[in-house]
Image (cartoon, rainbow, N blue to C red; front, side):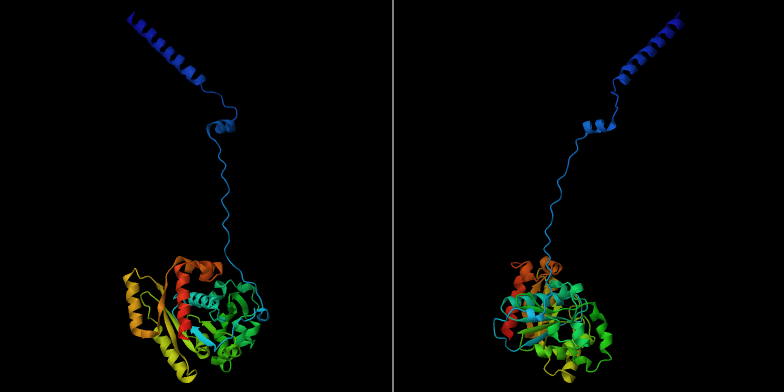
Length: 329
């Protein structure tokens, strides 16, 4: 009997388990449509489209010199200044663009000649190089007058002679030309008396294009970055200047040295500034150009800093520099 009772007990337990399991299975609702089940469990949230960012970039219309606005003041003696440093990345084109624009806004007539094959001064002023039919290359090698190349009024009081990729081959092509060092000087000659300042943005090298700038210029403006190796290469530049001065351009001299990308919070920047001022003396401008994000952004929008961020530190520093330039005469 004990064995039979234990067997009955096991069967009852098995039946109890079966009775418990069946209701659990039956309690799960049948799902005919999976998509409806997902919609019940999750709420679909529709996001609003991202706001459109306004394009602040500027494109300068390609006009001819004949369409230039009338000059409202009497232009004095033209000063031809080459902005030069054989070391790249020192703020040379940035200075060419923003100093020219600042002087133009102060009522001066300024011509900026882009002599760098990279064409940064051209694009930084909103000139679309692929729409330019002629550039400084044509003046150097095809004897086209600058009046047929100048794009006037890219900013108030500022005209530009653009550079395109064609200029990259000029170094080689000039080698076989007669009076190759005087090509730019001859092109600039007829423009004297029409502008207060003519700035030349030189390439970061000491090739024939730079030699042309040294021969054509009255003075040199040398930007020097407040970084390690700041004076590296400046010695070679000064040697080249002396050779050109003794043989081709006796009036050539240094107009000023400009400290760029300055950050007085760092010991290195202060040390470089002190070293440059000791080396060059009084020809170093009192104004130094700070390192700012806005100065880096402005060229990508085709605007000088005085238009892109007129109240910022970068704009104020170039306005102060322009005042110094005017005071130096």
